[in-house]
Length: 468
Ligand SMILES: [Zn+2]
Image (cartoon, rainbow, N blue to C red; front, side, top):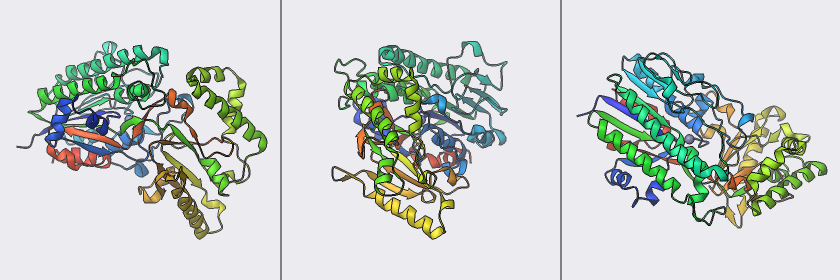
């Protein structure tokens, strides 16, 4: 018989292929997979937490909700934060709450501060600063709540053992507190968000991956990510064991995780070489060259982390940063905007207002698409696809995407700087941030139809469908 109640969990950045590669160690997950209760789940374009959670909550694709930003751990302070207010009233728990269902929502990333629902909502600030928030302060002991919400600080190599230990403990505390408030009522729908798997994989990846260029040889922390997966496995099992008779249990991730790109593609150099934008002045190229040479040297010496701190003390760093954005003449007509950081997804703006006709604009767009599709590194194509934005998703806010969006193979990331006339370089920041998002996440639980969901685009509908 179909169950009337549902628990949904998001484990941020939980990766399908990691589970697959470690099935001898992750026996409960392997069991689920063998029985058809665990399957891959596609993310959105770009595969980042913010657009993906937004899509999961609301059922809108990213061209409909329009929130495309990523969490930039390397340059957090500079971010313009998107409009998250679109969640309120549009999330699956709002729909269910309006239908008279009792809902309990714990740590929904970005849904902050708490709002009025038929039940209990407990959430943390989106990035930093701000208190834990709830719609039922009389019910919740805020003082003894573990840290929830978004987290952005980044640990140094020296702090990594402590970071690992603290984040494991924090994760377990979040699950424990979730269970404690579960018992405050008889809830029809329950949501739990856990963001620590993403964070841990970003920083700990290189310690655990012997094929990584920056893998330390001393073997410390080599099982840290596997242990994190085991901790999550234990907690997923506990939820299914404790509540699975009464509840549908659906556990998903917003995207996968893996080795972050080690190579970079100099998109602006490519646009210059192909005549789409004018070259930079010699002087600006010199500044860029100096910066990139220094980073390359630091990367060779495994000193990027110290190097960036060192850089920050000088006004020079400021100048170098700004050199990124200064192009001459044609800058506004065609350019590579900030889109997804140093990751495989990239974009190119082609400003229609600079063209005489729609045909001209489309012709140029097509030329860039065709050109990019043929970019080769050592005789191998680097692109998985290059598309006009409206061919990815349709929606009112499709113009929030660059006119052209491309997806490279996972080994490549976008670099908007210049380094001589090179098209490819190494990702010097890999040492600091070695784990990166992958397109395929995971879905699992105690229903076999989880394997037919396929994409986070379908989650909202799937969850509401369980209450039909
Ligand atoms: Zn995420």
